[in-house]
Image (cartoon, rainbow, N blue to C red; front, side, top):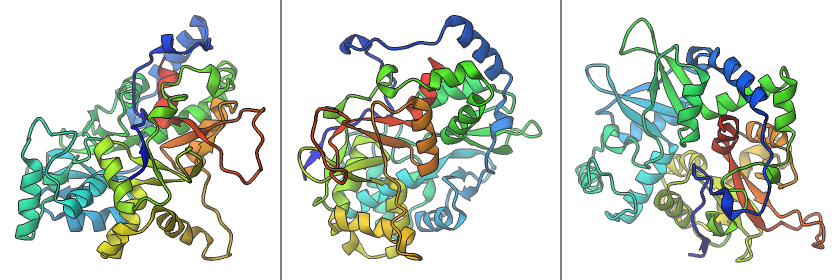
Length: 363
């Protein structure tokens, strides 16, 4: 399998001494005002959707069906005493499918709390019933984070900047009840809206990506990618092994971007198919299956382009993240001296994610 090395999409490292760029920064007076405003926003103000719970002993198959039918980004795994034990999402679906397909008990990310979990899952699968509790956060990318209803936006940012994608918000009425879920995308949407009311914040978002201290903008050697001729299982395994929720799909070894595949795509296509042959499908064919629903009604290809340029602004990037419903965009080369055709895919130079967007506000 040809692929580029691991991406740092959720990295919180900021080794700025490695870059010759001089990054822009907001003034202390501006950031002080922003922090004051953000502390007045509480977690309950940003709740987007209710918590959808599933019994801890329910099967993974039922959990997958519930994810698909509900349209929820994740399920809360609930014990008999109504306490919540963890979360289950499409990244966990992908990790489970890879484990089931390969029966590979070894993993690069062993669970320190239960080093034998892979063996337990395989044994449960052999017995015919894998409880969803056993697969909760199998991806190691979906931990359970809980905050009180009156936690402020700074508290949320601290979790999102560490790579969290969602936070459950407790109800003030009961310790076992929740008001709902706040996601990193929801927080980003709030910042995009807030920028229209705050000229100083809008001015900061008007800076180009190349001028901001984003952690993975130019880490081309670390972008996770598969070539178009790799198999769907190759892509799934890479996402599972490297702990990322999407991979770039490149046309060739030079890293020219064709598209992207996410764990959500995997869940929505592989699970309903109930056909193991789809795992051996070349990635370029798998991408075509992802595109099918968007062009099926009128023949138009509406599949979003998951890329931006270093010269694009942070505001534009945020809007594109929100419009494409993606967690990350791939950054492609915009060297004005390189000859190119409009239809020629550009080489990758890095990535920018929702985590980067919220982290840049948290700096």
